[in-house]
Image 1 (cartoon, rainbow, N blue to C red):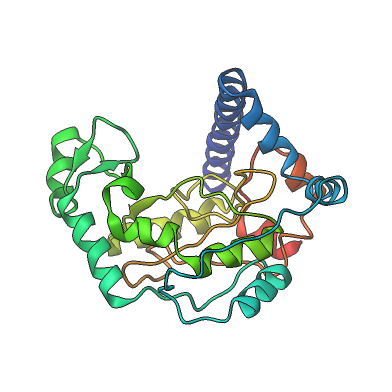
Image 2 (image 1 turned 135 degrees about the horizontal axis):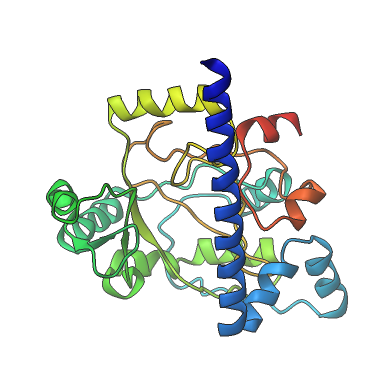
Length: 271
């Protein structure tokens, strides 16, 4: 019985791997045809030598930040930048209560979209009703055009200290490329139990976990920086981040060359 279960599990994982491989390959080629420049950035941004070559051949731009606008944050910019360069992340950027409440108010009165699909819009408070109507469970609820529709998010995009952090970290004048707002729906207690049982049974990359519950790294441009703000309290089952210190500098060659940016806990721990 145990051998049969293992064989079945291995077959499912094998099929899942190849299905995911061909799907990701298709997505890469599709985006390459639609936007060759984006594809080049995604490929080249994996390698640390690219920004180093850029800094060697291109003179750094003069950084000018508008200090007339008062920042929402009481932080030491140089401390944040030093932490970013050393550890790949920095903690302590906390939203003022007024901004937090304004964004939450926006989130409760504006449609989010199930798993980012444009035809599955619903108010956050009506999530279960929307799931019942379309017969599926949403892992995520995305908002569109939040930077244009929510003044509080726009303030963050133009905050002088956030721009200064980005400028000093990137070594040039930062360009805001977009803002995202989303819910990552937490797992119910029964689902948490089933998830953990599946993880113990298969313990293979990509076989059991969904959504953001993977170690991964983002590829948005040659050089980029992201600011994340939690709008609600989180725990291990509801979207809390886990980071590996210094991993922005010491990625495994296989991680750089693979189409798959996601890795299992065991693989990261071993490396």
